Amino acid sequence: MVITPNLSSGPGDPVPHEGVYAVLHAKPHAYYTQLFVGIGTFPRCSVCGAQVTFRLIQPVENISEDADFMPDAAAIRKTA
Image (cartoon, rainbow, N blue to C red):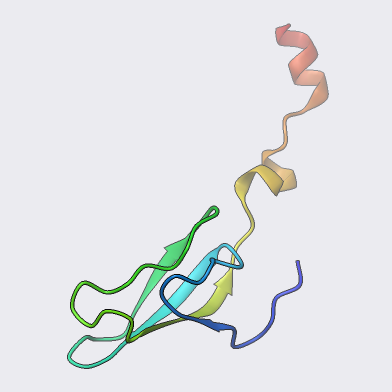
């Protein structure tokens, strides 16, 4: 997985990588983090509208791509 460091996006931009993003709003909001998974776009803020930025701080892999969660071929044959 190749990740561009300090990748920032705004509302309506596609979510480029699954992961934990810093969510930076215009005042009076506080900084927080949020997990984005799957395909979609970053949302607008109901209070500050488009004045929000999303910055990837921790990329994550989809569990279906993690070798520890891949089905074991031998186990599948035994149950079939």
